[in-house]
Length: 341
Image (cartoon, rainbow, N blue to C red; front, side, top):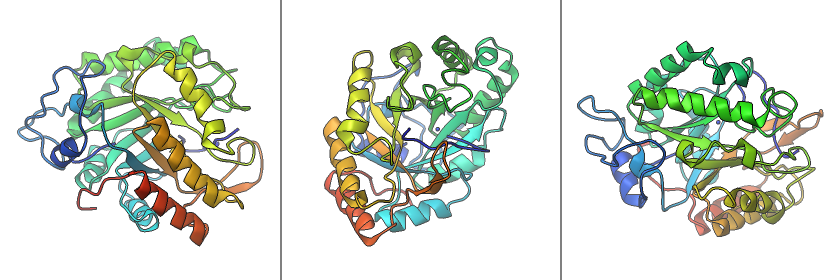
């Protein structure tokens, strides 16, 4: 399976509110976000005069974003700096993981947004059942989380229970059903909406359908009124993922049958091999042709799921890999220079 098993804090963009809105032509409002009025927002660092941040005008970006994902906290900014050095441009998105029950860090996320990265939180229900979440048993936590996120007063991409179609996850097939996932997603979304939280972009993030994740995706989809972006996860690895057309295209076609939401590749990377340079080029060319709004790179070394083989997903595993990443991301216009980071 073309993904990475996480332990501890597992797997879950956009521009400055003024500079970003200029660079990203925005479409109509999305799920439950009300007005697209952006008055009262600053270029970086959230809203002014205590006004809540509204992401409605950010939901249909015209450009292509480039991000980085790591399991470290938002404050660990060296990850962003290292990625910028390797990629030749600072990332627009900084994705990180958090376990169900963890507090949200308003100051850390504000730090990212101030420095030009749209925070993306991958919230993982590792030790909690989806049935309990959907049944309201953890509503005290959901309400607290919603209030903490709203207090941040900047935009946040929230990916809840990503890779829900992956049997390697405790919330995936064999552990929970698609109906459990949908009920949990809708319940969390409804609590946020009921509390008037307007600064969240809801990213539904299945794993690509491959030999390790064979479940149909339609039963897992909560519906257009509950989703802003489709976030797709897939890796060029030793089992699946020889090319974009093999790794992503079949799943993109399946999703297109029931949703036309913008697609962000929320986790991807290319494993070290003799083909890495060519596959990096293939990834950017394929993603651009598919019309995705961006991709988020997993820049780490990690053991392949179910085995002991350590895979090296980092950009600069070779001079050729790094050069291909820089050239192809620029050629296909992934990434926007903004912010002070």
